[in-house]
Length: 132
Image 1 (tube, rainbow, N blue to C red):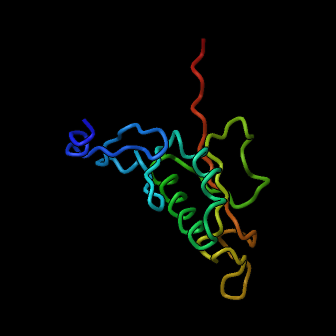
Image 2: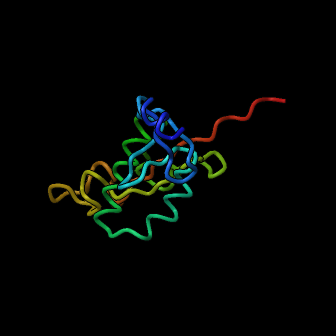
């Protein structure tokens, strides 16, 4: 069965084992040696990020940031005070600024992308609950 799914272009999530079609790049993010679905992403990242060295972790963070904003309607926040309430957040990812490489400075000035904070926050939102 697994071989047949692979022939059809489906790959499993490294965490839950659910198969997803790879023809839709929003189904699985390829992070390091693993493919992870959106549902498993938060839990997987909380466990996995502590096992990585800084360069590898930052590379995966930037890939996750791009994937979340491109395919999962993620929004990038430059300041902590602008974050939406936690009850509205689904995925909450802190990423070193890709523009200044987490230094807070760009060309000797305060980085315009992270506003000198060194990090940005990527948030995806929970789906609104249907009215009952």
